[in-house]
Image (cartoon, rainbow over all chains, first blue to last red; front, side, top):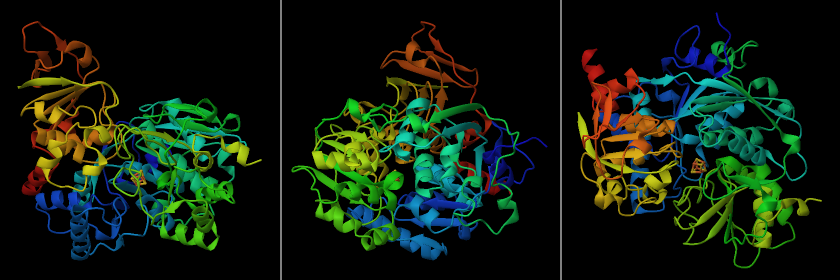
Amino acid sequence: MSEMTLCEKVLARASGKDSVTPGEIIEAKPDVAMSHDNTYLVYRSFVDTGATEISDPGSIAVVLDHRAPASTVNAADSQKEIRRIVKEFGIGRFFDVGSGICHQLLVEDGIVQPGMLVIGSDSHSTTYGAVGAIGIGIGAMDMASIWAKGSLWLKVPESIRLEIAGAPRLGVYAKDIALKMVSELGPMGADYCCIEFHGSYFSTPNLSERMTLCNMAAEAGAKCATVPSRFFKNEVTHSDSKSVRACELPDDKAEYGRELSIDAGALEPLVALPSLVSNCAPVSSVEGEPIDQAFLGTCTNGRLDDLMIASSILKGRRISGGVRLIVTPASREIYLSAMKNGIIETLIDAGAVVTNPGCGPCMGAHQGLLADGEVCISSGNRNFRGRMGSSEARIYLASPATVAASAIEGKIADPRSYLR
Amino acid sequence: MICGRGWMFGSDIDTDKIIPGRYLDNYSFEFLAFHAMEGEDHEFASKVREGDIIVAGKNFGIGSSREQAAIALKHAGIRVIIAESFARIFYRNAVNYGLLPIISPNCTTVFKNGEEICVDLDNGRIFSSDDSGREARFFEIPSIVRQIYDAGGLVGLLKLSDENE
Ligand code: SF4
């Protein structure tokens, strides 16, 4: 039998085969299938197929996070429908408004485990690779087909072996490495591929940082991204199933389509310039660019360590007059821990607006949209035109530290001067 | 054979441009169609007609998994999208909604904005209907994609396979 990458192993198991090869079309059964506010669309297509029962309700998870709480009557109506659907079909894993962002919750709750196949009707489903799973994003109708028959056709992707070596210097975070990765690969550099992470960077295990990296792999077009569990064995819950556990690690002689490396130790803080994520530059090249809003949150960088870094920079300081700082914790658990640690108090003291957990203004639905001509620096993952409101607004992406430093100065700022 | 007017777009047309996030709380297909491509071309929805074709550069549909991007284009009248390349989730969504995505490495250099383009899948040709002989190369459409397209979309295919069981 040929040697397989982590992704190939997971897909072989999920499709009941001994082995799979890149390019092959398979019919795969996900261990977990997640949809969010678009569950209403899933349901509509599901009904159209004529199905009357969900094939495997135990594998389905539904999260209300994108417009939570409902921002319009339309959103309220569809969320009401979703609650009814969840009851009617006996969907066990339901996270209502206020729980947090889908990707955060599925990891935090231990639902996603190493070696699993997770399909999500959200493009950042790549995030699940942070616990050694394979997470693949699809649309709502594909999810309806999973509801109806329990499986989905997939093309087996080629794997890219991406080695991240070294330890980042002061002021450089997983987000900066992620931005570097996307700019090196380009917006389609990992199209249809699985990025398998390796390298000494992962020898200090940090789930949050791995989530940031796997999350942003989507911005290089990756179908999935994963970190083999040898780097964090004791840090996550492993599956009880032997066959799932057998897919946690790639084979030693697995074949990769490409091999790349990034020297984390050589990086400085980066920003993605408007309006493409791969458009990266050192923060020093845009220092002084005035901003109107700073946003700290999202499935990329809305976790406890992110809030902590920002609050350590903002402690005893105030954000610049005329600037809004919006903070959206990624989950209720994170929100609570940040409250207990005094982080929320520090942020509010500094002038931040702290919202409920969820997606916040990340995709321009509510809670802090941008006006014509405004500039925002965000800890999120996308800066496309119109992403956060007006298509005449401009969005920069950066680490939570850079976002916090910029909020203080009212213009894009290098976080390193606040860290010494 | 499918013929329609071709509308040209550049590369990296993301789903925020095809249908901005603020409209996603509305599930009326007509409403979504009315805002199709709004982030790139405000006039698009009023210009586009039933049966029209989009011709675009690289990475069409990059970004969010929102299926409303495919829905908006479909209900605005678009039947075929010819692009140098597609973002993968958009590609799937388009096929699922009965749109035909065609990958053509030279489409943007062969065709002109607004002209009539014909797609003849059976004979493997995409050409300008003006007799000038201009043709675009394109990659073979994978059989699974052809199957879904021929069934009118994924729901159609699922219904078919139910009947055959
Ligand atoms: S936080 Fe932003 S990128 Fe993440 S799931 Fe929500 S809308 Fe998508």
